[in-house]
Length: 399
Image (cartoon, rainbow, N blue to C red; front, side, top):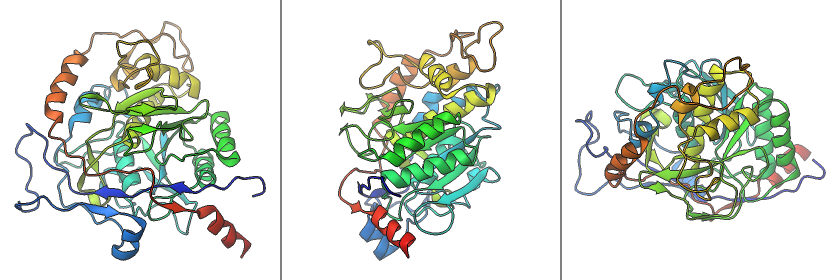
């Protein structure tokens, strides 16, 4: 399309492997036989995909919920909301169409690069994020997403190695809006803007869809501004671990933070994986947004953002904080905080907790003790592979 500035995204690979049992957990279901050395990581680079094929399923049973779910306590919000009636788009590498945790609630959107729909996920990260948003427990005691009755719309914007461009990302956001998504979780940040991406962000806002995006690439403790998080109106999310914020030098805006380091979840094939980075945190915030929207479907994106920010677990610093913005998302407070008398469905009002919840500081300190044993075996890094998909896409269109 004339006027679009084509840009290649430098995106390195994804490392995936079965998760290790969490410290202090009850006796887990049997996993692969123990060996003297830990299993090697499966390095997902473009060359790796060409040589070895797509990510292989994990053999580790999904038998533990992990520290992030213990910190977020979504089950305390479920008596009021489980996300029913809300569609969350996961814009990334696709979502495994056969994932049991999303059975009956997964809608396959387009694959804007390549052929077919978004039901294939060679990298595995899109599937992992979708399960964090809305995965349902499958009876083995494993993790659940924050909004286990929300619908997931899969939109694939990357090639099989996880690379995309700003223009393709913009196409994916537009497709998500057109298919009815109220929350759009962007899992692939890009290093620069484009006219097409900026127009897509405005298009989402005009149609009442909230975009939630990483404030930095996964695998980086420092980062210049990335997109779409740097656009006004996009909810920019940073990552935290059991010991606190993980971002060391984010030059872009941060609105909220959420657990993102050493997160356990379900990946392609249904096995257990761990992951780290703002992409995981983005999925958690998108799930929290779905819980609120299911309860108050009339909220605008601005009102929904205000609700999430106002009910967040605030740091003891001036807000917005450079590392965590307005704080760490609190799904329980976002759902249970009282709405002023006579408030309309579209009015978030001034949140006032109806009852004191658990002491969050004690919970986070306890998790910090256990967090030292969390093994990070899924990382996405920003740099090392440039794929100029825009040029290839234009060539196909010309043909």
